[in-house]
Image (cartoon, rainbow, N blue to C red; front, side, top):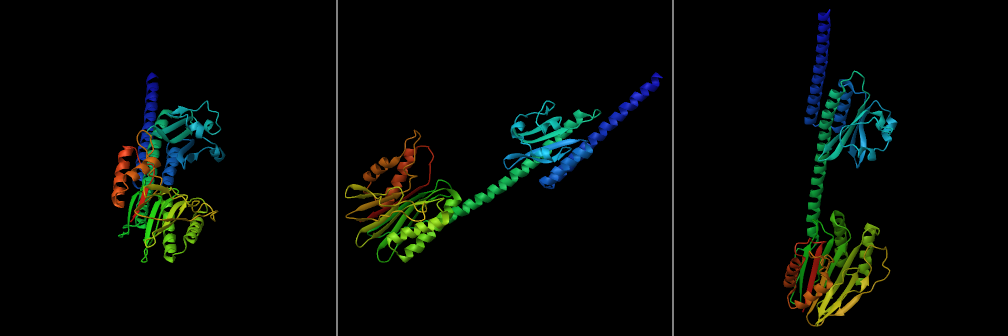
Length: 414
């Protein structure tokens, strides 16, 4: 009889070993199938369906819920053996507690207490997926099942995360290309060459903070000796600012070609900006018209950084004007500035990115340092002054970054 009992024990061990071998073979086949599906770029939904099927039919898992973070919140991507109504429960706070595989016997959460175990998947110490499993039978080889579920969950989670990162990279590449195109278009909106003559000089500095900036300047010369020039700063940055700039440039050129009065031109520009932005964005603008024959300057400052006029050893701030354009459907007030330029004069226009430059000690370049520089170098021609100014600002800021777009338009008249 002892021999018979030993034979039974041996047969029992053989049967157990066969079950383990069969389970291992199923696991290997499942992993091979998953790997092949990943290599064939099966969709995320397809991978979730395979995951559900393997756990249900080949591993014998009775309860499961797999969570991934989608659009900023954790969502259940596939599940089995639990009521659908429980999936609406908020798990955000609960999931943050799980950093390692953990039993759930003490959980009071209505969804989590349906399961026996949680398996988190981490990538660079950040969770990218959680799978909950439960419903084990007394004769289940829980250890081996958990090991396989852990393995296949990691494979699925990493594959899905790679898909997400790849899509994100593609989107970023498309966005980068769109920004490049916007930057190329924007470069065509500002003059490639500024007009000049024996009675005046014009020179510019144009340094967008990012690839696409929100600053704009323009100059239009007429055969009768009048020059219209402007500098503007558009709220916001990037592609939206570039689009608004393109719209503004088109309206500016259309209006200048008609040669309306300064008052009419500003009112029409304000209406054009309002139609596009409805007050959501606005534009600060300095617009001027200079008549070479009479040496008269007309201007409007629409909420812009006040240009400096250096003439006869004195500095005048050009501040007459109105509110920013596009802020209101109609301008509440408008004052046209007018001056007669006697002798040699310098009109220095800029956006506030220039005076906002800081050095490493946190000190602003500011209007006082700008004024002092202009007074010290007022004998230079327009181009040399801008070159010297840019070098001066670079030295001042040391290694501190530029905080904003920098645009300068310098006009010197004789």
